[in-house]
Image (cartoon, rainbow, N blue to C red; front, top):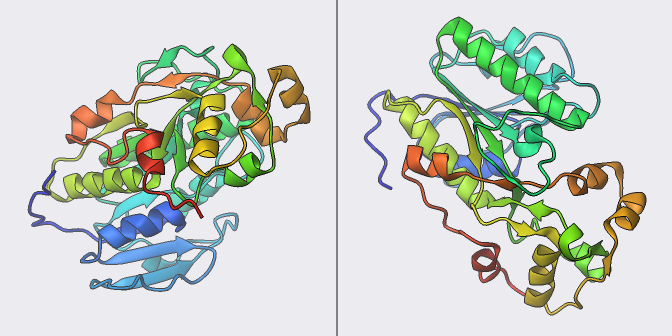
Length: 299
């Protein structure tokens, strides 16, 4: 999809400068960017606009520095919540310390806010029902962003993102180590989005804010091709010429899993993300895991 001209191009503040923020920055080479992270971030190669990096610890409740929130900027908030509690104190600190409200706000959440649905489909009309504090923290952050945007009359878009993957973000080591997967119909459904597709969506949302046609509301983000987790692992094993993963009863795997893995494996849902495709006229580069694996080197 061709981007519209940007007569009101904004600065873009990337809060939580990790892999996805870096991919987005590479798509915004002509923009003025502010990178927020715990440490200094080097200017991306080939970046032509102004570049600023603000080392900020969002767990520190001191004021956010003035240069972190330039006037008329678009915010893309990617920082994760803290590891404990039911509220996102990091987001609360950012919103309280910001010196200038944004022109638009994009918040990256997770489909974990829906909780377990026994493999049924969920869409944006499905009421959130997080079963774990991880999902509750995300729902708290969504609520804070939406209230902040309402109070200041700012367009905001919340993206409930499924599992993010790329060639270097696959569980290849787990497959190589022979990590067992749930057997047969006990395997929960997994949903995913390629990192490049998520970055494309974010670029389109920034464009829409700048042209005065912001996409607002809450949207699921997925490739719309969920698969059971055991099938996903089998596909990865086959692509990398590794032994097929052994299967075991789900109860056995849950007993041995880490707390985070236990949370993921105890929830099963299929995510309908067709609304974001309609809203942006977007189609994924990688509509299936198989399509993405074809681009992944085997060694």
